[in-house]
Each structure stands twice: as C-alpha cells, then as structure tokens.
Amino acid sequence: MRQTAPLGEVTRRARIAQVVWARADVSTRAAVIAAAAAGLAEEADRMAQAIGAAHSRTLADVWSAEIVPTLDALRWLARRGGRWLRPRPLPRSRLQWYFHATRHELSWEPYGVMGIVTPGNAPLFLSLPQVAAALLAGNAVVWKPAPIGTEVALVAAACLRRAGLAPGLLEVVPGGAEAARALVEAGVDKLFFTGGSEAGRSLYRLQAARGRPAVLELSGRHVAVVLAGVDPVLAARGIVWGKLAGGGRHCVSVQLVLVETSAAAALTAEIRRAMADMPPAARGAADDDAVSRRWRTLVVDAVERGAQLLLGDGTGATLLVGVVPGMRVVEEEIQGPILAIATVESVERAVAWVNGSPYRLSASIWTGDPERARRLARELGVGQVWINEQLHPTAQPEVTLAGRGASGFGASRGWSGLLEMAQPKVVSETPLWASRRHYGPAPEGLVELFRGTVAVAFARGLAPRARAVARFARALVGLASGAR
Image (cartoon, rainbow, N blue to C red):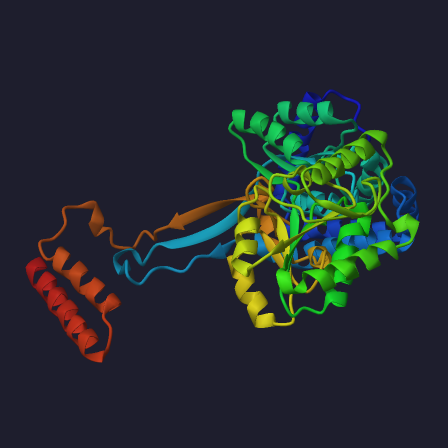
C-alpha cells in the first residue's frame, strides 16, 4: 500500500472504490475494522518493538500509550460506532401540530475521500483510530503519516487490507510537508490534520480556498492549575509524569504550572525532587540538534527575563520558576521536557491566564476539594479538563479531544470524532393523504388558533394553562365554524 502514483491518480482511484464501500451496510464496514483490530493484535509485539526502537521509548510505554489504546479504539468503533451512523427518526414538534404528519429521518453520509495527516509523536494512537473512523463512516482515506511513522502506517494499512478492505480505499503517502500540501491540492473532500499549529493552519488555508472542510487537532499548551491545600506529593508526581511521558512531546503534555501562593513552595520542591529522581532515559533528551538548540534558546530567554532555573539546561528535563506572560517558554508550544512554574495570587488570576492563552487544548486541576475543582473546570475555556490526573483520559475510546483557539477546531475520537467523518442528511416525507392547507390562502381564524397554541405551550400554573386551553378550544371551534 506504499503510494507511488501521482496523488491525483491516487485520489481518483479512491473515489471509484469509495462509491462501492459507501453502499455497504455499516455492519459490513464494522466487520472489517474488527478483523483489522484482531490482525493488529497479532502484530502487536512486532509493532511495539518497531515503535520503541524508532522513538527511544520503553516497551511498557509503547504498550500502554500506543498498542492497547489503539486496539481499544478500534474495538469500540467496530462494536459501538455503527449505532451513531445508522439513520434515525427525528422527533416532531407538538407546537407546530399543523405539520405533524411529516416524518423526518436523519442519516450520516461519507464525505468521499478523507485526507488524514498524522504526527510522529504517537504514530499509532494518533493515527489509526482516525483512519478507522473515516473508513467506518464510508470514506476512502489517503493517509500521510509523519516520516518517522511511515513504516507503522504501512503495517497498519496491511492489516486493514488483510481484513478485507478493498484496493484503493486506503493509500499511505510517504513524505514530509510537501507531500501533505500535495495531498490537499489533490482535492480531498475533508482534511483531518493532527500536528503543529503552523503546519496545520498552512494546510487549512489551502483546503479552505477550495471551499472544503477540515478538522484541526493542533498543539496545546497544557496548564496544570494547583490549588491551595493540595497534596504536594500527589500533584508533583502527576505533573512530572504528565510532563515527561513521551518526552513531553504530546500535545497535551504539561507545559505550565499555575500554583496558588500558599502551595507554591511545597509543590516546587516536590516537582524538583521528582524530576531529579527520574532515570536518564526518562528525561526526554532531544534526538535532534536543531530541537535541542531551540529548547536551550527558550530557557535562556526565560532566565534573561527573570525566571530562575532550578534543574537542567533545556536539553532534557528542565524546571523553571518565576515565569511570567511574554516569555517564550510560556507563550510558544514547546513539544519537549521543559516545565515552567508561576505563582498566582488567586484562582481568578489562573483562570484569566488559561483563558487568555491562544492555545487552549487541555488543562488539569489539582486539589483536595473535588467540588471546587468541578466549579473551576466549568470556567476554563479549554477542550478537556482533568481533575487530579494527567494524560490517560485521552486514551479512552469514548473520550473526545477538541481544541479551542490556536489549538484547533472540530473533534477527534469518541462519537463526536466519528461524526466528523460523516455529513448529516435529513429526509422529510409527507404522506400523500396528509392535509396541505398551508398551500392555499390562510383561513381567517388561523392566527387566533396560533395564539391559542402558543398560550398553551408557555402557560405557567394550572389556572393560566386552563385559560389557555379554553382559548385554543374557542379558536378551534371558530375556525371550524368559519370553514362551514
């Protein structure tokens, strides 16, 4: 399934194959996804070894963060996804009783050819569930993985082919930024992009110029809000794990900690201790000189502007305190193991800081008061909030990830993400026997009948409702008398 033909030809073949695939019942498509999941499970050890070697990750990390969540997502799609895509009748309004004979049915139809561009930091989990969702919805897919994830994509595509996926329905496009641009220019019907903000917006401009939709799952700037009275050990362990898991390269990795003043000293000491105790292999060292130079530049900028460096130098696990708005380490997406701490005098200040950021993908709240955390979660203008936890909620198959602001738009994963892969259609049918009085001139007494309808619908209390019903009845009698 390695793509070699021009992308225009690939897209053309995909359109032909998609017509037949879209006609298949969703249960047939789900069976292919289920069989692919079973095949991938058989390949899991080999896949885990390949991902671990390519990304310098432990097997335990790959199994817990890539293999199991991906298989879980595919199993959920195969077992539960079909019910969201099946046609369903829509309820009819009683207020508009005069159109009550008309039935309405909502169905979901594929877009056609989906262009899916995926990142390299989680080459399986951030890719295959989206591809499988698009296929389940009846689309063909042209998949452009990050270069480091190409071999993983080819293995996954081969599993789908062995599971019964017809030729042309899924093509893997190797290459970098130019390949992604060519994919959009080839005319995909919808773009699904996961990756950095700058690259995502660039592709979106191309897609929007063609009048076609997109979902952008872009980088985040996860903020951990730590409230007074928190258990500093628990919060520190969670935050450090959320920072260094995957080398801090996840879009939902912690970047900034906002801690209330009374909790700042204890929390900072525990975070420093937890980061220092991490084994060297888990400290997120850069594997690219350019990336390492950028990280050091961010640290130098922060220190020159008044921040204090407590641990590291930017090339691995690094801890800064006393950061303020305007520092690059605060404002830019890092995608690395640098953690910054700022003290805030109030929860209101923390909320303003989070909601004022352009990147609003996710946040976490750490506190011993769950009710206070739930109230605060409603105030944070981010796509997902975790209370006393980090990262793992995104691995659940029904949990949706959705960005705000510069972190993108649209939904990924869960039923909301599945429905991004299809477009709604409503068919309304009026029986031949039904009255169609609205075709002709309105009777004299119709307005009074409408007034009576509204009075009944919005009356409060027994006495007002009784008067409203009487008004409706009089209007109905008057209309009937006038008709005679």
